[in-house]
Length: 473
Ligand code: AMP
Ligand code: ZN
Image 1 (cartoon, protein in one colour):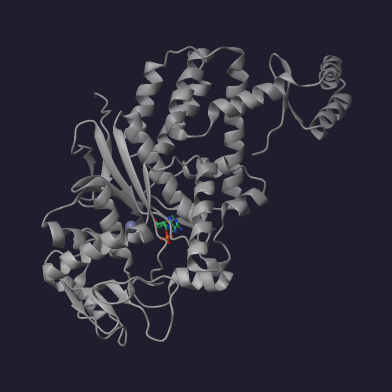
Image 2 (image 1 turned 90 degrees about the vertical axis):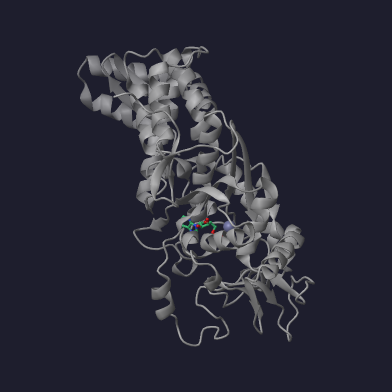
């Protein structure tokens, strides 16, 4: 059977893998929902951003000219999906004793720093909600003109009953939701699925962030921010919209509702949703004490790229169970990769790429971003006896355009460590070789222990003992 190299993506709209057909030949427009900058992003959030990064890199690898937009939610939105509860930004600023703008600035900065540590490429456009209040107000005005809004005592709401196919993206059971609605939750809402477009500032409280609008002082709802900014920068329709699975039933459903109410047609062709990270099989949460950040990983002496590698062990749509043990295994695998590639470096990479291995790699990444399969191809190639090391090197460097594991840099660092093995260590190795020839196993074991205590690992290969510097990622 002929191999199909065409890029295929699982589209939440059709619940099927589809060939990716861009709107404009050779170009791809994508939007990824970004962080709410009231706190440090967790490894859960970063799993989703790495998934977005892989999508961007795979599109580029397929020679698409990608315009990639991501929002920064620096306006508070409310802590639950029902537009009730506390405002995350205002709560975060109270906790830190700072203004909401200061908190947003601090965590935006940290978000970019953490992303860089994970080799997540910067989007073409990173846009802040607070800098697009005008666009959001204009969109709400448009919805108002078209008769999709109503006013309650606390804001302007979208009337989801005006849209016959509301919830189609998530295949929502509207009747079930209506029946299951809790009594007492915002009784002014006409339908349980209705959501806020604009919230009024409380009369008795000065908010850190509030703006004038045709409806009075207040602040925008969360969903309108992504609708307004995605269309401002990408136009409509645009190609791809991605985010975590949790965003599907409310946030993305409401983005679709707003957009289609205004434009009267589909505004996004492919919706992609990434699976969640669990910790020790359980939900991750701040209150559960398992909402780890990159600092927690660094504390355990793991290199940040180990986490990136760990996310490659599961397909992006599957759940990924994080444990310290699984991170440690990912660390061993990545160390091994750098070591083996480092040992190839006495050869110079040539500029040719292996057709056979790159076809198999492309087939994997283009099959709905199947990175676990692509990683298996990497390992198979590394171990293959018939592929020359020079070709392995140049092919791996090409693959790293998607993997983003800094293979070249880390392999070179490792090759330097090998080159710097001191004479004293080489001497112990030779003494040990002699002990082994003499079948003096006791001495051989003692010398192995000595090498290990000095930071080296000893491999008894067929062609003699190899002493290699340890790296612990
Ligand atoms: P938030 O800051 O909560 O709006 O989340 C930002 C992004 O991270 C969204 O795309 C979420 O879907 C995603 N996200 C949140 N928690 C997790 C998790 N445990 N695993 C994977 N993605 C997550
Ligand atoms: Zn969004």
